[in-house]
Image (cartoon, rainbow, N blue to C red; front, side, top):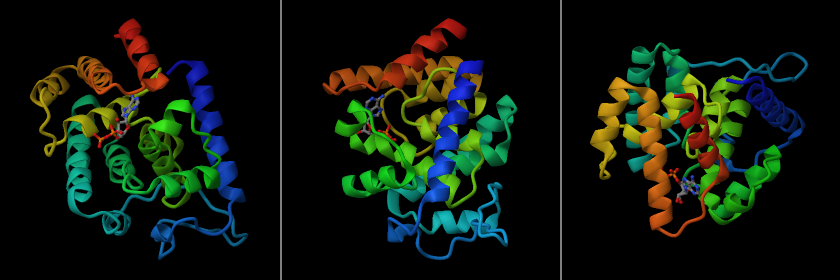
Length: 236
Ligand SMILES: Nc1ncnc2c1ncn2[C@@H]1O[C@H](COP(=O)(O)OP(=O)(O)O)[C@@H](O)[C@H]1O
């Protein structure tokens, strides 16, 4: 990761944490029950420590159902496999995958409420393609409710678009989401084969396919996907 992106990531995460520590109450009932991963010190301040254990995993999975649950489990499995192969922290990858779609089924109103709560400012594309906001809102929940560390928060935030200066963790999270065993779109087999051989080639394949698909569907394109592709072409 270049120094500029590292600084941006830190600034972004710091913004999340500042707004988190200022926030009061709970926007969505979805997260108002017991929160086993949330730790408080005697002074009622949150300690940001990643807690990835069976209880937390069960808590996260209990908030998902149907295809989203199946997809999340598939992502967790794929991410562990990629982490083993490419030498990344398996638990961090699995933790990111468990949380990456935690707000995916939320309505536009709920997404925007979470944006307001966590100080996320949607850009023009995100205002139209509001479903994309689930990456950023899930990242904020991951930090706030589940104590996810900044690198996991960053990977969740960019799992839909990619970004410039992607870390190994970012790449694994993006690709695990793309190739997990429940995906069946044209080209997924090629993406799986590439991911088993060369993660950057697989990532480029995924970014190219997503861009083609968005163009085919007449959709706007998020700038981070363009930046991700340009950066990858320069650095692979
Ligand atoms: N790079 C992008 N630019 C603009 N919109 C995008 C981009 N990637 C995804 N989207 C839109 O965001 C929404 C969620 O995408 P995504 O999370 O990739 O879906 P899924 O994981 O369910 O296939 C979709 O409406 C999709 O069209």
